[in-house]
Image 1 (cartoon, one colour):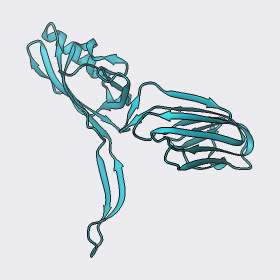
Image 2: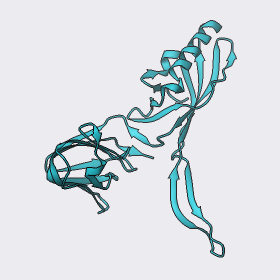
Image 3: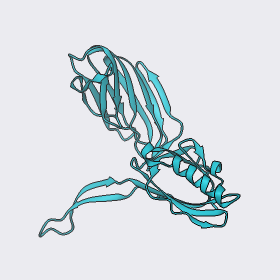
Image 4: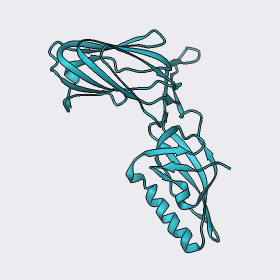
Length: 243
């Protein structure tokens, strides 16, 4: 028997739910981007993309009566309301990792006396697995940070910039160097660079015209991040990330 789960901060015990089993694919769905060419054996390989990850949980609600069962089921439906958007989904047997999920199906209730069995189908538009705890660091010269996840993490950077040219570099464990460059006319201010969402702001306004180069990625292992020029300090925030 599988253990319980927490969705959006509410534990399944609140509804007297027993989790019979769960199905979490080891990886997100993989879409192969191939192109077949007439007269050419095989296909050209343009890589892959990941689809939304499905998660299924087969549950049974225990209740004292049919009325109690219906009341618990209605409350559960309210918690799972997909219009509330994605919420953290954490399983008791993996309390250190989470998925960002929302309900993807109706909840047909197979009622037997004061019990009801059903399957919750979640979808994770962001298909990766994340640590519950965030990693944070602030540096004015360099920072060595170790990413423990097996898939690349994409950090958020908060940059205190004095204006003018400057840069932030990440030397990855595989030897690749990624560079964020500030233009000579970039104004002083606080820059927010979200490498996952690929957004850049300076003091709350769009800052794309003043920042060029790469959005940083952190592979598994030790990453060395340095700054130079008008960049006086950088704060980094990310979660260990797995497929």
